[in-house]
Length: 111
Image (cartoon, rainbow, N blue to C red):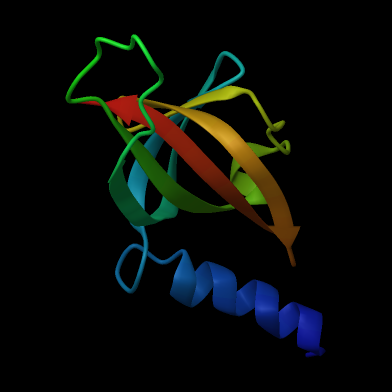
């Protein structure tokens, strides 16, 4: 087995294994629905920058990183698109691929 094959095996059998590291996530993107193993990591809430004359007190920005196998979605999502993860709507801010894995930087507003 070569290095790339080992990495693919480890992604599927360890990192995307719901018994080890991942959790089953319901993902909606581009009109398609997926129930796949994924990791939603670094979910962070931060006060958002409020503009002058902005009356929306109590609104904060939520950022997260989603790791999911490219083969599970079948396509690479595009930056700026909307994606739903477990019923929460996010905007895709960054898109990266690493050895068959999608790494999506997500963002949304919340109360």
